[in-house]
Image 1 (cartoon, rainbow, N blue to C red):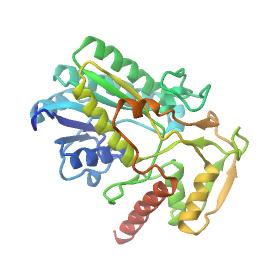
Image 2 (cartoon, helix red, strand yellow):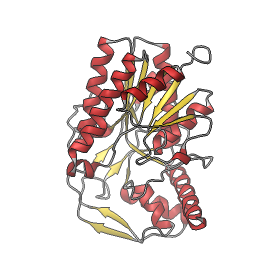
Image 3 (cartoon, rainbow, N blue to C red):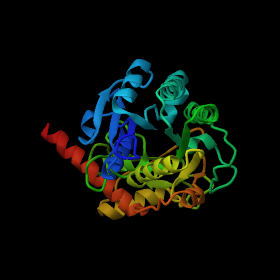
Image 4 (cartoon, rainbow, N blue to C red):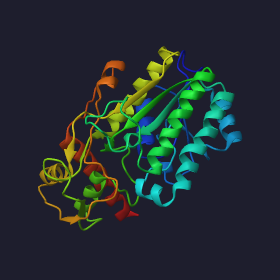
Amino acid sequence: MSDGNRPTVMVTGGAGYIGSHAVLALADAGWRVVVVDNLVTGFRWAVDPRASFVEGAIEDAALIGRVIAEHDVGAILHFAGSVVVPESVVDPLKYYRNNTVATRSLLESAVIGGVRHFIFSSTAATYGIPETVPIREDAPKAPINPYGASKLMTEWMLADVAAAHPINYGALRYFNVAGADPAGRSGQSTAGATHLIKVAAEAVTGVRDHVAIFGNDYNTLDGTGVRDYIHVSDLADAHVHALEALIANPGDNLTLNCGYGRGYSVIEVLDAVDRVTNRPIERRLLPRRAGDPDALVADNSAILARLPWRPKRADLDLIVTDALRWQQHLVERDAQA
């Protein structure tokens, strides 16, 4: 163990969007961090300089074993994986390889290396189309795409491994993650991202010429899909609190929704973007996408009860403002390149 009772934390996928924010939150809180990322979708520049960096794949057992030993890793925050839902339908084997098979290898390396705590980046996609909204953690798990199924399989593996070995875990089910680090140190930088607020920010900054609205015949107040948007920095903070809880209670595991418990429709989000910029962007109505639920909203009472985590940026206009500021930074940086 390093730093008294604090283990060094390995962050897989720490050069990606959510992972890089988790690295910032850990480093800001004084943790020692080593990032492992293959840089297929992540960015080396996104890794905070306070963290050590190793380029490589999580399924490279020799590499992971060496990193665990050399850095005295006692905990893993696992963000590495593939995350585009439509792509998972077209290329399911990629998702079962990158999200399920690779995580199985990582878990084996963790057990062999004596890692005691493991936090997994799961998703609300494990619920599929929910029977009731807001969604509780004990709601039926019935994923409707390979992405959600690949994540649910990992949750099953975690439960079985924790029952058989001296390791505990947290499975954090994200709802819609948006925004960027308020200090401007990281943000959503993936080309071709499909998240609504990112797409809208690209439309504001001229990267796109419109925003598509996929369907207006949902069973919601204005007919467009409703989602629970959580600021990425609040989500990163939730990981730090979950890690502290796992260390303090080595016999306990956590499966928690990460959301605000408040949903916004596509129209409400785009109205917020127009409000923040005072410059309306073009909207184009397209047919709904197969498998999109009417509404996905978290019941977040469990995370509020189990952890001292409290949202600091639970405001749609604030989330939009941070996302826009980061997108403008990217546009200006690319223009200077």
